[in-house]
Image (cartoon, rainbow, N blue to C red; front, side, top):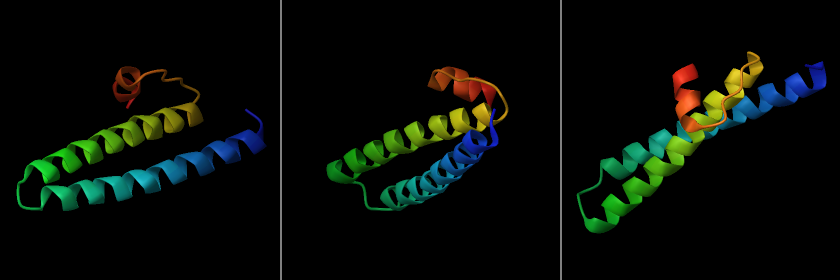
Length: 79
């Protein structure tokens, strides 16, 4: 892998991990709210967003190691 594309992949991975950290924090905030139908729906949406960021972060990190993860299942298996 050329150093330019590796640097871009490192930057992408770093950005994804930062976004994942924020998503997990925001999910925690939603879960700390009193239980209502609205809060439940918001927590589910935040979980889904966090899940997508998690597997895409793993996918990016795996690519740095020369592995490919085409799906969430293979990404979490690789992790």
